[in-house]
Image (cartoon, rainbow, N blue to C red; front, side):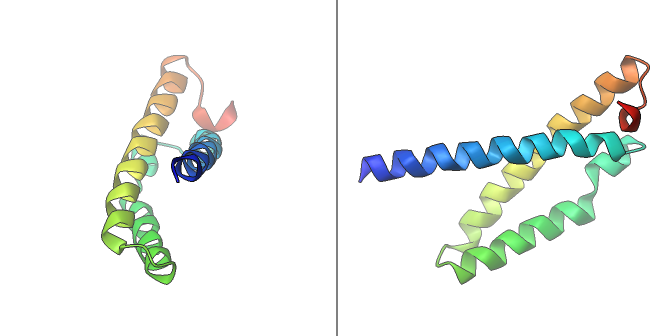
Length: 95
């Protein structure tokens, strides 16, 4: 049982890392910090995760809590990438 959970955890982390690479790339296309925040997009992602959870036999509340935390963390990460690029005199979308 634990081996299966460990295997799933490895895959989840691998997928989060892949998602993080796309988030990093997406920062290149943002003109300002408000575009990084994108609350409408964040809510759409959470709602979609809740729907997918229900379709797959997972509690939508678990998906909601997990995705809200993950999305917030990636937004914070992307804001950091954006801020570093601006501080370095680079326009983030022209890296």
